[in-house]
Amino acid sequence: MRKTVAVAVKEIRQAVRDPLSLTLLLVLPAALLLLYGFALNFDVREIATAVEDRDRSSESRELLRAFTASGYFRVTADLPAGTDLERAVERRIARAVLVVPRGYGAAIAAGRNAPVQLVLDGTDATTATTILGYAEGVIAHVNAERVRRGLGLASLESVPGIEYRARVWYNPELESTQFLVPGLTGFILMITAVVATSLSLVRERERGTLEQLRVTAIRPVELIVGKLAPYLVISLLASGTILLAARWVFGVRIRGSVLDLFLATLLYLIGALAWGLLVSTLARSQAMAFQIGAVTSMMPAIFLSGFIFPIRSMPAVLQIVSYAVPARFYLVVLRGVILKGAGLAPYWDQLAYLATYALVVTALAAVRMARREA
Image (cartoon, rainbow, N blue to C red; front, side, top):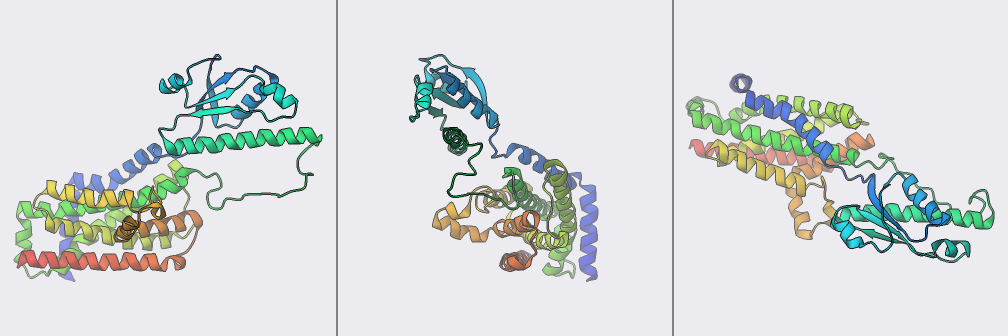
C-alpha cells in the first residue's frame, strides 16, 4: 500500500509541475463543453423564408401571418411572380420558399381545396425534414381554423372526434441541448482521461524515470493503481466542473441523485484511465500516444455511443461493434440520472458492463507492463 501511495504522491507532484496536464484535465473539458454545446444544436428556429404571393388576397396574407406567427419562419424576401426559385435557393436568399398561386383566395372563399407549394433546400436532409414538420403543423392549424369558421363555432372543442393531447416527459420543450450536453460529458471525459494518462507513462519512459521505477520492488498492479488514483481524482473534479457549466450555461439540471451520478462516473473514468495506460504501453513516443489515444477514444465516443446517431439505426455490424464502446453504456445511465431523475437500479446491466470493462482493461494494462518489464 505504501508503494502505491508513494507512486500516487509522485504523480501528483509531477502533474502539478506540468501545467499542460492540468490544463488538459481541468480546463479543457469545460472549454470543450462550451464549444460543442453551442455549436451542436439540432433546434431549427428563424428559418429564412421567401414568399412568392401570386394571389395577393386577404386569404394569402392570412396564410403568411400563420407562418410568421408560428415563430419558426422569418420572411426574408418577397419575390415577384415568375422568379427563378431554384436560383433564389442556390444564392441562399432563403432556405424555404412559400408559393401561393393565383386563385388561392377564390378557392378558399368557395370552400374548395386551395393548393400552395413549399420549396425547400434539401442539401441538409435533417433540417429539411424538421422544416417540413413545422410547415405541416402550420397548415394543419390553418385548416382547423377554416373548419371552425365554416361551422360557425367559437372553437373546435364542440366538434366530436378524437381528442389528441401529447405530453412530453423529461424534456417538454424538446430542446436538443438537454439531450446533447449529457452526451458531450461522456465524450469529453473519455478523450481527456485517455489522452492525459497515455501521455503520462510515455513521458516517463522518454525521461528514463520509468526504468528507475522498474528496478524497485514495486509490482505492475501497484504502479498502475498509483498512477490511476491522482488522475482519477482530477478527472472527477473535471466532471464536476463540466456539470456546473452544463447547469449554469445550458440549463441542464441534474434531476437524480448526485451520488448515483458520481458512482457511474467513477466506473466510467476508471475504464477510460486504464485504457489510456494500455495505450501508453503500446506507444513509443508522446506523439504516437496522443494519436492512438485520441483516435481510439474520440471516434467511438462520437459515432458508436449513441451520442449523436441512434444505435438502432446503424447496420447490424456496427451495432455489435458498439458493445465494445463504454460510452454507449455510460450515456444511458447519465441521461437517465440527469434527465429522468432515475436511480441506478434500472441500469444495473450498464453498470455491470462498465465495471467489467474497467477490470479487463486494467488487467490488460498490467499484463502489458509486466511483459515490457520482462
